[in-house]
View 1 (cartoon, rainbow, N blue to C red):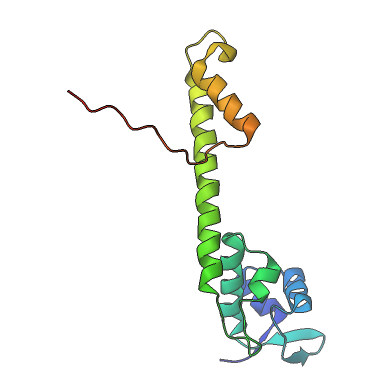
View 2 (cartoon, rainbow, N blue to C red; view 1 turned 135 degrees about the vertical axis):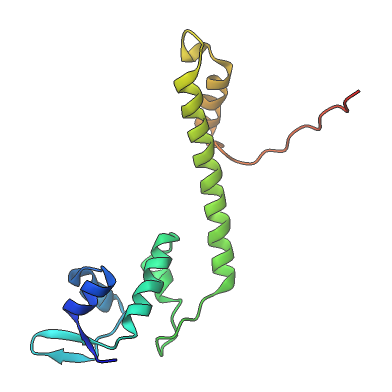
Length: 145
């Protein structure tokens, strides 16, 4: 496949040229030369940009993503870092789920005032203490008879 100029890379990847220049400045991608005033990239840059996009979607910083590439440009992904990010996402999902459920309850709550609703008051306490959505051990239920 032929080398791609920055305009073609931007068009194919959906990444603006300004972001491509920024990624090059950060060392995430590298141009291989110029055609006139336009930077040229090897076609493999498209796969690298896809990996960068995946990392960004997962919440990794650009510095973390940069460390996921070896000096030759090949992916060198730390599995422990991926597992830690997955755990972080689990915590975020639990928190967002609790907030979503609280909002739905508040929207449909039949209490005359939200401040009179025991469920809403529990949500307020959880939010104030910073434990919204955290896992808590539930007391064992008594056996059914």
